[in-house]
Length: 351
Image 1: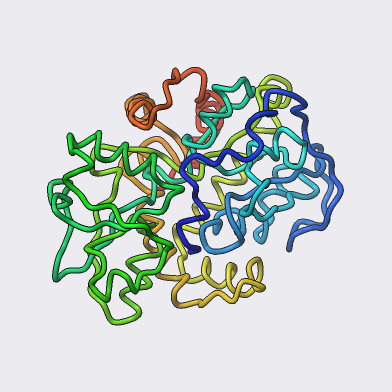
Image 2: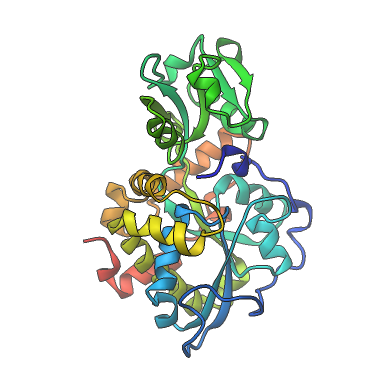
């Protein structure tokens, strides 16, 4: 996976104008592999990813490659790379660059609070990949272990860091925060005791370089948040409900395949969809295995991929409050569409 700066915990790009000009995307643009033909009633749409095309979006690759989008009635689902300034999903929805996007509550909530009519309709990652990554010789495996330690935190992740401290009753003075630019050598050289990074990539990279990493997942340390959330406009929910249900059905099928085959997920990422990203298949395979642990939980096994229980929704609202974002669940989430999908076809659930 890419370095942590791609996940500015509160990406501000384009938020000021999000309440205006929201529109569905057109169907111009290039096609992705496997989705250029077929006759469906929903035409062509664009899905904006939250970052560049790596294994993080394996489910989307399978949905495209295996024809699930086409079978659902779409002539094309174009996968737009995210990342970089001005390309947040929320901005994309505002400008008409995309019809749907993959984002996070910590990015969508500020837009909603500024008046943008957006909703989260599902969550791929039941647990956010943020973690404090350390080494076994000096492990940080619970929040109390942070006391007296030097932790690397990027400026873009100041809010998540402060929220973590608040969630665990820790004073900022108890931990030494060190400026950090996603360089793990600061950890391996002893300049840091740990750093805030992604559990899907950081430990994998360290392990492949011969180190023995440990990690503290923020979701298990008083700050439960989902990630890779499907975000759409309220207009889409109101006026294109069947289209949205068809899209989510195809996504569910794609992610079921991705969960079942991490190696193929890595191949699709490295050799097809992200072939210009110089991805390592072995590393991508290990990252796919790690992210499956965030996608598949007891609740998602019982209720279906992307679903969120009322308890998980409330936990996210509480976590957002700790990050200084006071918002009501009904302002941010609408899981009714996904519930209708599973009611119509219970076989979509994981076996």
